[in-house]
Amino acid sequence: MTFQVTVKPSGRQFPCEADETILNAAIRAGIGLPYGCKNGACSTCRGSVLEGDVHHGPHQERALSAADEAKGFALFCCAKPYTDLVIESREVLGVGEFPTKKLPSRVVKMERIGEDVMVLSLQLPANERLQYRAGQYIEFLLKDGKRRSYSLANAPHSDEHLTLHIRHMPGGLFTDHVFNVMKEREILRFEGPQGTFFLREDSRKPMVLLASGTGFAPIKAIVEQAIYERSERPMLLYWGGRRPRDLYMHALCEEWARTLPHFRYVPVISHALPEDGWQGRTGFVHRAVMEDLPDLSGHQVYACGTPAMVEAAQDDFSKVCGLPRDEFYADAFTSEADLHKGMIG
Figure 1: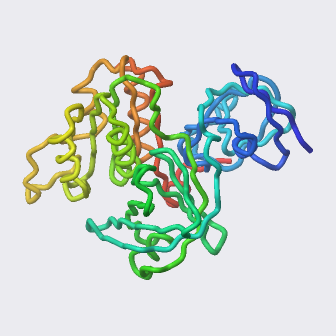
Figure 2: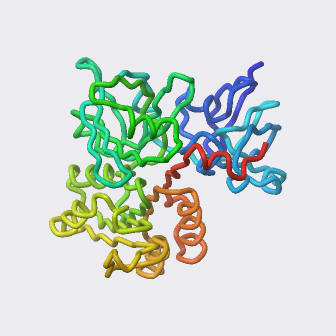
Figure 3: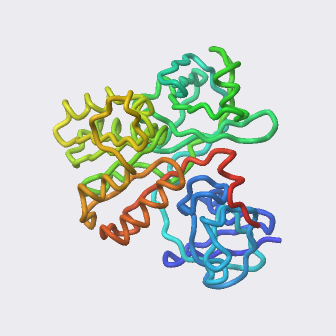
């Protein structure tokens, strides 16, 4: 059975099958509902059901509680229709500009740049090119039917190779393979581009770039894109890690700070040990932003990292620092273990 979904306030409409999620139907129709993880963990796709009924698949309680669901909120990445629907959601322009493709790729370089971080470089077939926006991600298609998502760490103009920053999660199906088994020349299949986390080039507002751990990967692509476009927008990068070694491209960020007139870099460490000799900022990385910029009302924020960091930043920046909610763009990295914490439905 097919249902009709109407999006407010735009009034755009698209069909949705009874057995597919509202988000997948929107993507298929080229309608840009915001989304990140696509698995009910990050709340990026959260909106309201104004008319009609939906039922939810498994999702994180922190992304949508039973109380919020009773108020009419929904996660469109795991909500399926029972009836025709009228939903309320902001839309992202330009999402359907580049087609999503399934492509083979060859591993051409593996560079271990930290204790638990690998930079993976992929090469596409000679007759293929992946068009994407700085900040978007791809999904690897594994043999067992599962998928693993990783952000592209290079800007679109520099796409001889596609680069990814992969942190080793011991016991993780894909990352154990990358760190213990994978060799150069291995063939990987992926689907992309994915996600609505990308640089909004139509704005002149100063950008706060907020990253934790390998959440730096899409932030790096965004900075490189801004450099390529000769953007004069101020960029303030706050990169957080537990230990100094977690800031695995610290030297690159310092180089940007030295050479780019509109760029500032603030590294923040949350669990420094005496042997680290750390003399810089400490604590939660989003709190450092609030200390430096108590008024964010005129800024635009791009945040990528753990769900806990992203959620805390969105909540505090909005409630305490006056950041407009529609100027907060985020991509929460969720591991397979994260998906099973607080899961309901």
